[in-house]
Length: 186
Image (cartoon, rainbow, N blue to C red):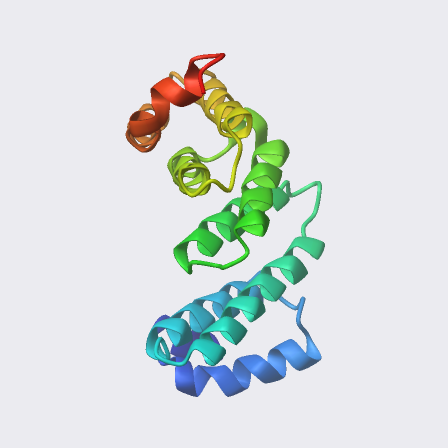
């Protein structure tokens, strides 16, 4: 019943039912986690003027993802997808712990290797360049990320989505490319 309300974006009515489900059967279905994240993202938008609430919502989103990760299964091979979604979501909501966001992107790529989803290349590059541009990441690290993303793209030449997302990587790295990719540069 609550799922119908979530699908209709009637989050205020769905939320109390969802809370009861999470209290009594959090791992009952993967949708409990997905729907929770969906609702909290909507609440972030709705309550954007209330910094305290927004911070609480963001923390809850992280908690939901971390709980969901504990429910992943090696046979289903779903941990990497959850990590990718978490990394993207942390970027999307502007999660303040940028090191955690970075670690989540790295964990997703470690888990998925060359099967990392194409869109992650662009979002990971954006995050890395944001950190580098704000002196929060050393040059060798941002170079390493570039090389890792390039290797993933090169391993997937038969899939146009990787080439399409690579254009974004090049755009993000473009202003810094000479200083990052030329070994021995300052």
